[in-house]
Each structure stands twice: as structure tokens, then as C-alpha cells.
Image (tube, rainbow, N blue to C red; front, side, top):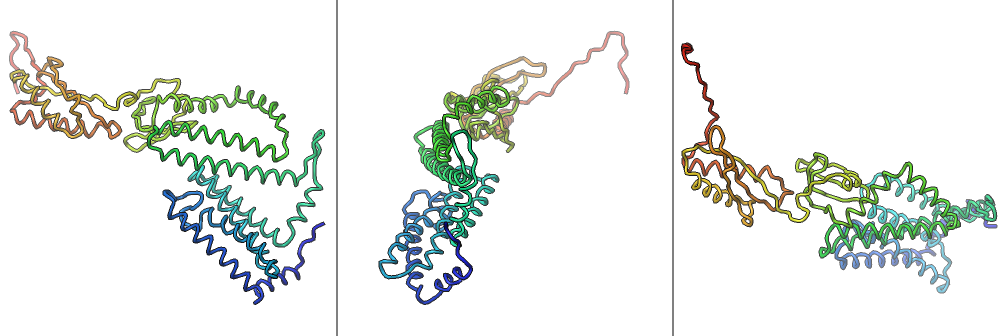
Amino acid sequence: MHQPLSLNELQALLTRVFSPDALAEWLLLLTCLLLAGAFSWAMSRAATRRDNSVLFGNGVVDGALFPLLALALAVGARRLLPLWGLQPALFKLALPVLVSLAAIRVIARVLAAAWPDSAPIRLVERIGSWLAWIGAVLWVTGLLPVIMDELDDIGWKFGAVKLTLRNLIEGGLTAAFVLVVALWISAAIEARLMRRETMDLSSRKIAASVIRSLLLLVGVLIALSAAGIDLTALGVLGGALGVGLGFGLQKLAANYVSGFVILAERSLRIGDMVKVDGFEGRVSDIKTRYTVIRSLGGKEAIVPNEILITQRVENSSLADPRVLLSTVVQVEYDCDVQAVMAALVAAVGEVPRVLPDPGPSAQLSRFADSGLELTVYFWIGDPENGSGGVRSDVNLAVLRTLQGLGVDIPYPQQVQRQPKGTPPATT
């Protein structure tokens, strides 16, 4: 049976740590930290992308590489102390601290890379940090083995399987470790995929989503097996889950399936200008459950993916990003219509956002009551920048052209006829 350290033993350990005999340990530990910091700094300088990464973080020290290297070097140095005739004192305190620091850094960086700017994830990080430091304190004081032995005596029996509280805790820690590793690998693969500009952004999204889902599935299976759960029991759980999906979660499942269908078919891509249910904007992101559409006015709509599959969606840039716009103007009947139309086409072609191919055109669209109605058509290649600005520039160009030609835009006119024999109205 393990025995915890008494208060006198802890006091004696602290006295040895700060005694002159521990000077060699202090120098050795400082050397390990300096070597870990120098190697981490050199690796961060050599890395092409190190901002907010798992290994390097926002700086060098706050990433996962520094505490992992420091822990590895400290473990090696701890094994060398007996060869030099030294009894470890400082390293008994340093190793638990480095283990806790490495666990906290890895968990925090992996979760931040997998789910950035998430409030629940920050809560999980804080809980993990508290558990790591509590474990370090129990390790140093010698209470950890005692507590684990006591937890081994508390258990339940399910048929032929006996589960103890210790097995559950160890299985939970193993499961958390496996899931963190799976998330780390998926985040690294996703970051590498997102940097490949040779692939379409939507294709990169679906590849990253599929890889993350597969890795998490494998991680969950390994974690359940490590926790002592019989995987054959998942058949019953899968049947219950299928019934749940059929009744209460069918909408959620339909949105996830629709998200993969959208990404696979590429019917919607990030950057497309779409109109859904009266809301028009640019597709800014496609998630597995919903799609984010940002209007030109700055508003964002979160549209469930099932709606994008089952309802009509107007996509202005699916096959061709070019969009046809038009503006209407009336001119007086007495003008030279063909000369005016040619001048308007030339003027509109000078507007910066108007495409030269296909170029603008003008048509006599209607004989209106007050004048001849001309419709000027023009194409733009950047609908994501909106149509209001280019339409205003085209209208200004049309107005300047008509003023330069001396052609008036007629005012609405009405003719009032007075019956015969009726005296004129007096004012």
C-alpha cells in the first residue's frame, strides 16, 4: 500500500531543494529549459506558418513544443543523476509541474485549433488546467497512488464485466488523450489542406470535414475500448440512435447530410452570390450543418443546409461569375435614336467595372407616352461587390452623354381635352 508523504517529509524535501547540494540539479534543470527554449525558437523560425499553431502558439513559450521538449530533457536528466552520485530532490517537484504544463498546453492549443473562438471550449480548457494542476499536487505529495488504490476498491459489476472507479478515470483520461491526438492530427491536415491553392476552397472544406469525422470516429472507438466498454454493445446503441434520428433528430441529420451533398456536388461554393428566401448575399462559409450568407450591407444569414437542397436557390455565379444588368432611360421623339444609342454604348463601355466582353448594348425597348424608352445592357464580373455602385456610375455616364448631345429626357406629359361648348376655366 502506498503511503503519502508526511508534512515533515515534504518539509525535508523542500529543504533539500533549496540547499547548496541541489545546485547541480538547478543548473541541470535550467540547462534543460534553455535547450528546450532554444530548439523551439529555432524550429519556429524555420516554420513557414507558426501563428496560433499547436506547436508554437502565438509565441514560442506558449506553444506545446516547449513544455514537451523540456519534459523529455528533464526525464533524461533525471535518469542521469544516480550515475553522478546525486539523489534527485528538485526533479521530484519539476517533473510533475512539467507534465501538467505540457498537458495544459497541448489540450489548450489543440482545442483552440479545432474550435477557435468558442466559449465552451475555453471552459473545457480551464477545467483541464485545474485537473492537471490538482494531479501534479497529488503526485508531489504522494497522495495520487493512495487515492487510486482506494478508487480501485469502488466498483460495479455488469454481468461478467466489473468496472471500478479507477478504471473509469483511467479510461476517461486515455479517451481524452486519444481524442486530443485525433483532433491534433485533423487540425494539422486541415491547415495543410486550406493552404493548397491548387484545390477549390469547397473541395478543401469537404476533404477537411471528412478527415476530421473519420479521425474522430476512430478516436472514439479507441477511447471506448480503452475505457473498458465492449464495442459489441454499440450495435444496440446504434439501433437506439437510429430510432432517435428517425423521430427527433431527423432535421439535424438531414442538415448534416445536406452539407456534405452541397460540398460534394459544388452546387454552392464559397464566394458565390446567391439569393435564398428573399435574402441575397455572398456565401462566406459552408459548415456541415449550415451555410453562412453575408449580404452586401453586412448582415449575415445562417441558412440550414436542408433548405439549400430542398428549396430554390438563385446562384449568380455558379457556372459563370458574369452578371447582366440594365438601366432604362427615355429620350425625346425628335432625336437621332441610332446616334444616341451608339453614344450611350460607347460611354457605358468606359465605366471601370463594365466588362468589354461581352460589351454593353442598347435597345429601343418601348414607345412610351412621353418619349422613346431605351434599355442599356451591360455585364459585370464581380457581383460580390454589389450592383448599386456600378449602376450609379452607368447612369451618370448616360446622363453626361445625353447632356453632351443636347438630348432632353422628357418629362411626363398629359393632354387634357375639353368638351365642345364648355366655357374655358377661369383662374
